[in-house]
Structure formats: C-alpha cells, structure tokens
Amino acid sequence: MEVSSGKPFLFPHGRFGVILLHSYTSSSADMRMLARHLERQDYTIYAPVFTGHGSGPLTVLEKSGPEDWWTDTQFAIRRLKDMGMEKIAILGLSLGGLLATKALENDPTLVGGGVFASPVTTWGQSNVPQFFPQLATTYYKKAGLDSREINERIVKINQLLPKQLTAISEMTREIDQHLEQIHQPFFIGQGGRDEMINPHSGKELAEKLLAQGTPVDYHYYPQAGHVLTVNNAHRQLFADVTDFLQKTFEV
Image (cartoon, rainbow, N blue to C red):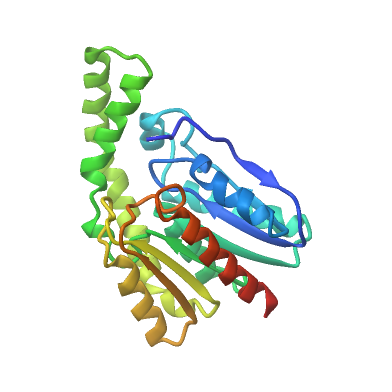
C-alpha cells in the first residue's frame, strides 16, 4: 500500500492532455513512469491524488469516498481544460479506471480513455476486502508501529472497510449501467495473473463495449499482475497506450 507516497503532479508539455488516475491502495507514484513516458511523446500530463490518499490507510476510509473521488476527477478535467488543452484523454488504474470510465460516460468532450486492470463489470469478485488489511499491516510495519498499535488500526479498518466497499460497489454498478453513453475510443489493459480482481474483467468489459459499437483497444498481458503501470508488463503497456493515444488524438 502506497497511500502515503506520491503527490499530484503536472507535466505541462504539448497541446493534448492526458489525465492519469491511480488505484484504491496506491497514489500518483504508480503513474509517474507512464507519465514521464507520455510526456516524451509531447503530451501534457496531470495525475491527481484522490482525497484521503496520502496520509495512511485509515485516512482513505475515514476522510473520503466515491463522491470525493468523482469530484477530484472532475477537477482534474477542468484543470486541463482551463490550461487550454485542445483535446483531453483520461485513463485509470483499478479504482482510477472506474472514475475514468465514469468521466467518459459524463463528458463527451473527452476524446477517449480507458482502464488498466479495472473491475468495471466484476467489482463484486475483487479481492480488495482481503488485500486491504494485509497491505495496511505492511504499511504500518514499515512506519515503525508496534504490534498493539497495528492491531488497533486493523480492527478499525475492518470496521470501516465494508461500508466504503459497498459505496464503491454502488458506484460501479451505476457506471456499468451507463456504458452505452461511451462512444469515444476506449483502451483496456488486463493482466492474466491479476491477484486483486477477476482476470476476465477486461475481456468482459471489452465485449460489452464492442457489442454496443464503442471502439475498443483491448490488450491482455498473460504474465502480468494487477499493477500494470509498474510490473513486468509496463513497457508493453506504455507502447500500447502510446499507440492508442496517437490514433485517438489524430481523429
């Protein structure tokens, strides 16, 4: 869990903008390598940090929720629009992919976007309930807390987590029910060894979008785990995203 690392960053460069949204248990740090890669392709990159992220696992649960993260996403879009970007695309990892999908449903001025390892159609099959406390325990150990302090925090996490996951599930169902509003080109990246979500999530989403006529650029990385932006698939992912964005922005 890297909720305490990473700050929002903006790399102003070209006249086309790309928003990168991080995952539930991470921060903008997991988007930095991709952002630098895309900056070299002459794009302006903005990676926000969702409300509640950046101060520890409990802060995510106590100080934020889906409505806050949606507000953060809308602010990110407005920021690039205010900078005068001619075209804007939005992409996200896991939770960030959910918010990117919602943005594409609600803002037709976005020219395209998509998801990396995001359970848009299969949130209920995720392993987040099991992984979040484990990741939090590791985080607190690295922070130097003793066993008693860690146990106290994990107890509280287990009390708060179900409510927030329910709220995320409700948001995800709403997103899934409005996929027909997406007409822009849509990128999907999915790892075959995803330990956090159902590895079939990407294909299910691709099939659903293709059936309604949405242009889909689907990529499956059979040996990759969940965090595609930094794991063994990241170089291929970066190349695939670059190709997708070049085609999308050219239209």
